[in-house]
Image (cartoon, rainbow, N blue to C red; front, side, top):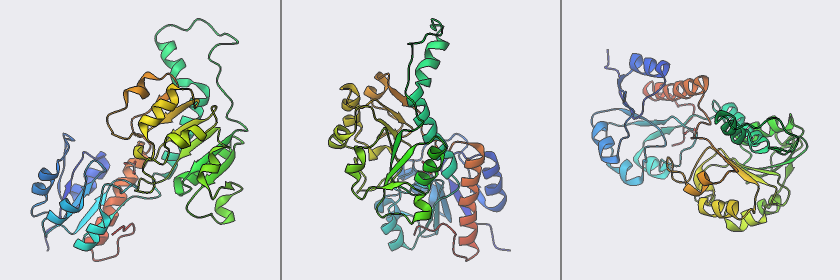
Length: 321
Ligand code: DGY
């Protein structure tokens, strides 16, 4: 019987995922969850058959070009794939897969949570209560804003953008969206399409960024676009930090150009711009969009389904390269 393929897991994974990985492969796990620098990853890859990675590992053209010939596949435990140079992978004949679909609901839930928390100032009030500083219920204290009936602009109407729209409709929000192309009527579900994304900004009480990170979306929300948003608008980001020019966002918050921001992702994770922390009207989460046990297990199993297909000589279901 052929030896089981060797898979290097670059991060500590949920127990159920590590169990299956260790059952079906000769797995090198990472119980300390320490980060692999490129050189260490290249050394670990010697003699291995596949890498099971996260966005923390940057598979640049240089790294891919230096991977040992034994590496046939890379499965990333993420839907985002900006950390992998796909053209370089294709050139090298490397199979690359990701984990779409299974994290859509969890990430859309978190975007909706950020909308609600921005509107109702829940983080602020929680801090005050825990510090024992709640004066008493008062008619004019900690007033937020309604979500019901407000306008939500969604930049990027892929799976997660559409799942967020579905949730927001439950709050009677009017949905506006911009996408590279207009969706068919059944997927649009009554949302208002703006071919010109800048024109959509004028309508937003909330603007949610749901596009992938790419050279086209890098710093898409810049100083000019922030200035175009109404001053009542909140910016929500559960996609990727670099879609926002973080320094420009801090300036817009400081100058009161917008009402606040609810963020789960940052330009230089895990560093957070000190200006975001200093603002009272920012609601900051540490990249937990997909962080539910069900979702993280499903993401891990998807990575394994893809690797299983590669090593059984089948087409992997979520192939990027
Ligand atoms: C994704 O899947 O891209 C999430 O952000 C987790 O990294």
